[in-house]
Image (spheres, rainbow, N blue to C red):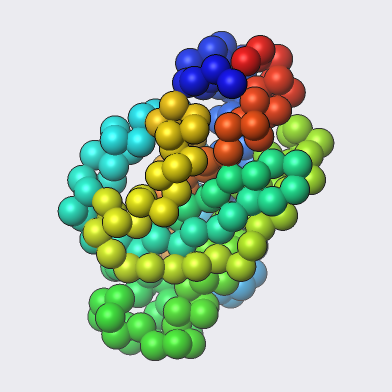
Length: 207
């Protein structure tokens, strides 16, 4: 396996990866609008291939405290999807959904945490299904796990995967508008080395 295979991507392959972000965001907006029974729009996402350290810097640095919700990809593509959001985003979204009055993450009870995991599950499946549609691969996701910690700690679990693919990942930034409130969310898609090779071959890139 060649390290940093993302660096072999040409403009056409980058466009395909961007389309994964576009399709996934559209699917997520539709599903979340139905779930929350309110208007949700997601701006055209920014999709970048970048080093994990640069991604951490863009997210506020390793000491920035975030909510991280991790799903494991299985099937034809294996790896991880990590949904990252600020505590304020989590609380505002849950307050719309549940009619609650959460002030910060520590005030979110079990019902709120379950709802937040379901929202992340919808987001992850939206992007995974977009990838599956463009590659004709079968992809399933495990039940997500959630943590609230400094970004450096949140990123530690998938660190082995990062190393296998040369510290490169697919960074999807999509700002949402939920009931008139602008909120920021990020998705990191991290295929394992063999799966990344399969995806790149499907896109016409040799490893």
